[in-house]
Image (cartoon, rainbow, N blue to C red):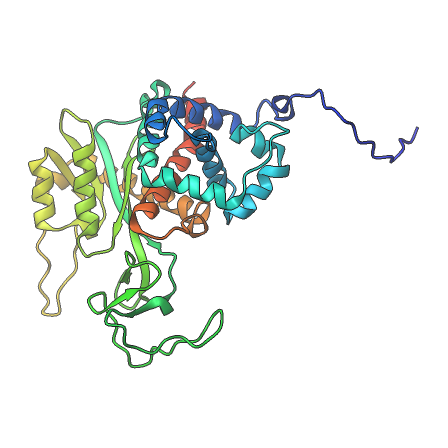
Length: 366
C-alpha cells in the first residue's frame, strides 16, 4: 500500500538526540576522548570566567564546535552555525539540545577567541595525551620534529612600506596594486592587516608569501603529535622551536630525535647532545659554489646504528600530520590575525589530528 505524502508536522518529539546517532559512528569514539580531556580542564575554565554576570557559551561547547570545523572543513563560523542549526550530528557532538537556539556567528567567534588567547589549545593537547588509554600508545624514547609554512590571513597587497610611502591599491573591494621594480623585505615593509606575518619563501626559486611557521614534535611509535607550536618565520625558527619543545617534554633518559637536512647545523646538533638527545638528523650533502661540501656534526658515531635508518623512515610520517592540517583543517580554519591566535588554532588542529588517529589505534591494539 502506498503511503500518503502528507508531510505531517508533529508538535512534540519523543526520540532522544542520542538515539539518532549510529552506535558505530566514528565521532562517538572521538567525542568520548574529547569529553574526557575537557573534563580535566574544568578548573582552568573556572579561572577564565567571572562568577558574576550573564552565563556565556560553555567553553566545552566552543571547543567541540571548533573540532567540528576542523573535522568537516567548514570554511567559516557563519557556515558552522548554520550546520549546527539543522545538522543533528553536529548538535549532538557539540552538546546543544534539540530545542536550543544556535549562537550568532559573531558571538561564537568572540567567545572562541577568548579561549584561543588563553592558550587553552595547548592545555587541551596536553590533557588529551595524558589520558591513560592514550599514554600507552606513545613512545618515550624516539621522536621526530619538523616545520611547515602556514599562510597568514593577509593579502600581499597589504605588505606596504613601514614609513607610509608607496602606492596604495586602487579603489574597490579588490583594488589593483603594482609591485613592479619595488624591492620589498621584512626590514622595510609590514602587512597592514597582520603585522605579525612575515614575507618568506621556502627555497630558492619559490614564490615569497606572507606566512607563519608551524612546528610539530611527533613520537615515532604510532605517529602521534606530542607537542606543537607556531612562530614567526626566520631562518632559525625551526631549530629554536625544536629545542623549546624538547625542553617542555617530560623525560628522564636519553632520547633520539629525527629531522630532515634543514636541521643539520653544527650548533643545533651540539645543543641536542647537551640535552642528552641523540641527533638522528639527515646529513645535508650540499656542495658550495667552490665545490666544498658543507660541514656536518652527524658522523659515524650516529649513522652506524640501525636505529638511525629507522628514524629516517619514521620522520617522514610527520608529513602526514602537516598534510592533514592543510587539507582538512587548513587555511580556511586559520583565518585569524596575529601570531598568538594563529598559534592556538594550529595547536588545536594538531589535537584534532590526534583525535582522529587515536580511536583507530585503540581498536588495533585492543
